[in-house]
Length: 281
Ligand code: ADP
Ligand code: MG
Image (cartoon, rainbow, N blue to C red; front, side, top):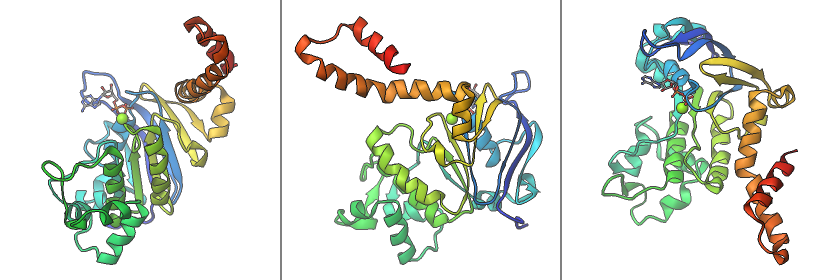
């Protein structure tokens, strides 16, 4: 069966891993219109990845249904479903094989030109050209060790080759340092262009670009809207953003302020804590 369009719909989906335990997802509904971008954010353990796993049918909802192109995803052959959904998740599995074979997993028949283009768009050309054996370099255990950022680039190149209309991103830039993350985001945005995207993240990065953001807490949607709407709502989203800024931005500002104050001696722990509270206001 072929989908009517690229729309992804989650319709009052509830899910429990075990009947005797509580619901991990509680009546979640969302529509990702063809070509639009929806993010699901929320604290760790709120059920984000579980939702992604339901889309890929690692499990089926306890109630409610998920539709792609208007059809319940249970009605597709599993291979067809998974060929429609490209995935970049937190940990990319690298097989002990050549770089080329790792790339071609998604589309064994990809032409050389397509491979070169995917490498370019994933910003891997330089790495590959620097290798004496190029794409025939053995990677994985006992081969070339790829850094976290390189593994994610490989995942992006794979997904570009697969060319699936729907893209599922699950913490695709987690575990990377800030600079690597920033560089990777450009490649990810390239991958998102023209696709129907469900982005799962506990970090609130690039949220201004999303058509809708759902905030999940303990399996429930507690807020939804655009980035600007959610900031104005002063709820959990805003709170998460402030904590994130405190962790990543304010320490830098504080360090700069400390350097400016250096002639008076280093600030006491009390002083720097007060400074941080002051900067939040
Ligand atoms: P998030 O991605 O938002 O961090 P998850 O969807 O991974 O959250 O997890 C939601 C809840 O489901 C957590 O309480 C987690 O412990 C539980 N959970 C996740 N995976 C499984 C599993 N395979 N079996 C049982 N419980 C699970
Ligand atoms: Mg997760």
